[in-house]
Amino acid sequence: MASIAPHLGRGHVLNKYFAIRRYGAKEAKLLAIAERHKQLQQMTGVRPVHPEEETVRRAPPHVLPTLPPASIDVQAISRSNNLSGIVGVQLHCDRRGVPQAWVATTRLDGRDVSMVFALKKYGDEEALTLAIMARQDQLQQRAKSNAMAGSRR
Image (cartoon, rainbow, N blue to C red):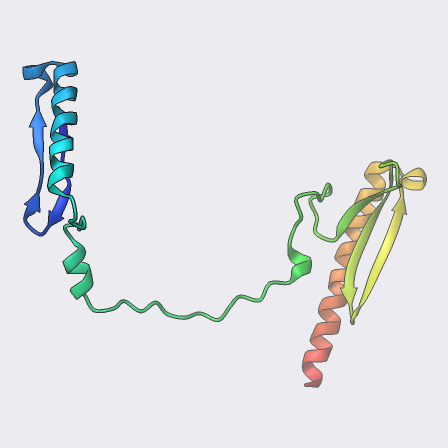
């Protein structure tokens, strides 16, 4: 069944049904299109209104609770190009794009602290493992530093 049902306001709905069983699919479609043209002429100059618009407008305003913005540690955001899957552990490459080392980097007491593990010396897997362990150590140092700074306040 093809139907058209524009709302012109509360209690004013233009709709017409054309049963496919009665008219057939092609004829029902053509009748629905013709009816839509008539409805559009009736709607000229009339602003369509959703049937629930009056209800929404009369309802008391709904105020959402305001929450303080969440502070996000920029260093805790994993980048899409991070090959290690660990924030703060990156694969450094030379200018030609050849991998050279896994590097663990953390901001500690206002300065960047990093440890480099060369692929030539350790191999890829061991260098990555060492970099991850170094990053964990750096994060523990940062947590201790932050705890000490908090206790001094």
